[in-house]
Amino acid sequence: TSAPVNCHISQNSDDYTKEIVDKISIAAADAVVLAYQRLQPVDAYYAKGCVEGVSFVRQYLLNNGEIRTNPGDFKEMVVKHCGESDKELPIILFKNEEGKPVGSITSFALHHDTVFGTEYSNDYSGMVAAKLKEEFGSDFISVFFSGFCGDINHFDYCNKEGHNLIKTPMIAETITKQWLKAIEKAEKLDDTIVVKKGFATVDKRKVSKEFVE
Image 1 (cartoon, rainbow, N blue to C red):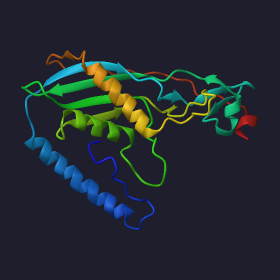
Image 2: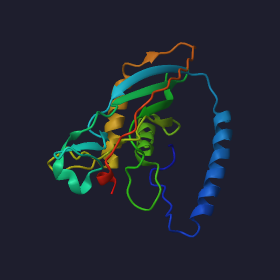
Image 3: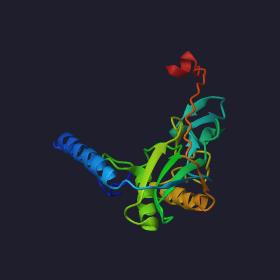
Image 4: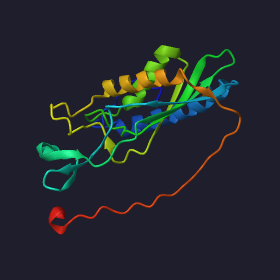
């Protein structure tokens, strides 16, 4: 997520696969070497923000009783979202011995698929990384994990004013603003690291034969 935001390679190019493989191979090797060379003592801090207005559950209840995913042509029939998106923005911030922020781990539940076209991009998390570098310096490392976002995207068909799409720069700006606000109250963590795992059972959605056809 620390690559340049405007780093694009056309998938229509004959050299696409070779160039991607070469770049990934070089980047992976460089990342290991640079990480080892930059090892330093840090303190970890935890903060949690809230990001609203950029992520939406993409299943909708229509006025005929049907449920549609990404309703598109049926948007005039939309009554409400079938659920609420996770708006939490958990952050682990790392500071060096001088108290300067040097890196972070962040998570947010929104598809990394907000840039249109036939080119690849590091999407909104790449823009967030670039903004954090502007704030804390070019050496700041932003690691970004997707939250549970299989049914969450950046379209809001409940907005009847026609502004259904939240664009990538706005998503990044909103997340960054709440990120910076959240870390003002970050609490220092002790040296204990705990991992928890759980399982959830969810019934499959059932649709009629007529709907499938």
